[in-house]
Image: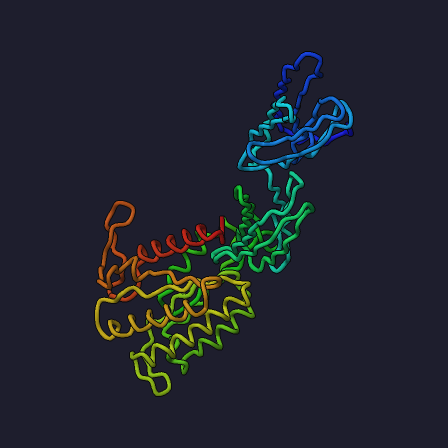
Length: 401
């Protein structure tokens, strides 16, 4: 019998039952083994010239005439994930039978997934798949999920050789690779980072971003983020005479090249845009168009991730009209830009659920004032809570650990 490969950890159970021969007849016997990776081998002992049919339950395995006393079938049947105990019966036309049994390994470690654990942004990494049993013809789904974004899946068929699936990792953070075969799932993680592991975080907007930016800078310092804060007081998307925000976003994106951008903007909006006065559907649509352009600019062709903060409901005044219109526009813009690049963080729901204004709320088991006296801006405690909400989102979406 030729040398065979052994699968580490594989356990073979062999049961040999010889038929009781009639007077003058040679014995009939059958043995099963799992020595060859991926296959159950059979050895039949029968007198030369004997016709033998071998079956596994109702399924035929082989029909042969013994040419010698021992006949080897080294790859009689392939291993299966849905049937680990294999029972075989050899039978002759005159009614003699012999049985054998073997137990094959579990499929739990059958799929081998190999991918590098670290990479740089913009590089291509190879996901290498291998069937450890060497059988092939396995349908597999390979899904790659960027930090914060939905996974992208490809359907492949794994052969007997290694399958290479390239994946481009465009931005820093924790990427997930998941390979699904009919018998289970294997997951691997790739940490994508610039040399030195630092991420570039841009925090920008109008006065609403203060002092939230300081909390983000101090709390993310230990995570290796390089934070750039650029507040532009009293500006708004609908008042370009003071600052053209879409143009400014281009300047920020090319200068800072942010991996992550946090934007809190809109408290000063409500000015007419073209022929559209605030705050009808035409105004909302134009605001959404401009905001979406900024989101895509900050996303830098999938190299960055954008977190835009919705406005909490104000206490009163004209803000009660403009804030809902701004938030409606931001929802449209974020939906159009796509979840791959943009997350709208609903501070409106967190601080003012149901659109109901409140000066104070319970945080950490105590009641704290979360709005300033003007009924618009967040207080220091409110900004601290908002920063914590953003950081939790960054960790949940694998931007930072």
